[in-house]
Length: 313
Image (cartoon, rainbow, N blue to C red; front, top):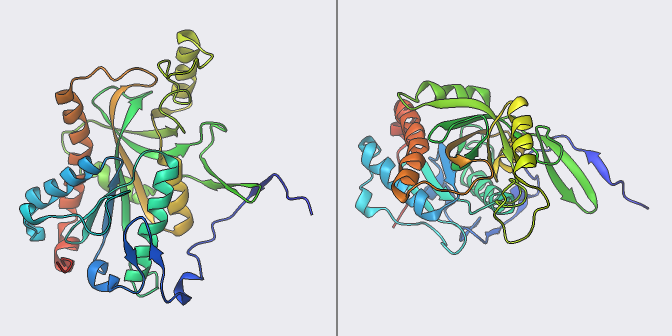
């Protein structure tokens, strides 16, 4: 039988096989279902994620320092689990975890993180129905200026220019919607304070170079500055504010899993341009996205403090 080349798939939720497994190695995180995951992670309410391990370690330290009510000493923070692929810290009921670079890497993290929380909820949706996934990233500007923070409404696929995530299974292409949770977005926006936050769509490219598009890759991309400018103007006309490399995977996965998600990205440069900001400027811009999320966490303090729980040493 010849397989169809394309199909539209509906969200199909959490894998029903998981509840029946006795052991399930979460290989890249370094945990297993047969561990005391409820004791370690049963209180988690918010999972923050970003590409860089160093940046998410810094964010965990900022949470512990700037929200002392969580009762975690910053100097005592340490990674939990394996660190070869991802780095995970826990600050009370808040996780800070790196997801690596690009759609392929974040998909792996999302699967294993979600299974981790499913098992921590005793193989039920107890945690998943309350948890929020917030990506804190960096991006290139389209309709947003350098130094602004973009709060995404939808993630746009680079081929179709539609709000879809594409998954390829056994010769078939499946598409899933990529709208971020509106209520979570509104709560984060309300907590922004004096930081300039713009709201709009995010283009998710598959590569930092040719697909973003960027003229400075190792290979001749086959286009020039004029085509690049025309493309940027078209994207801006369509309402896109920035471009990065993970948004479609995050929004598509969380929509299928029934998890509230948000994408909060600082704009470091113009789309397709070289990063020319100084190290100090880049750190400042990146910290703005973190600060927006920190302010949101503080606004949720009354929901977070009663559940504060630290993992066993």
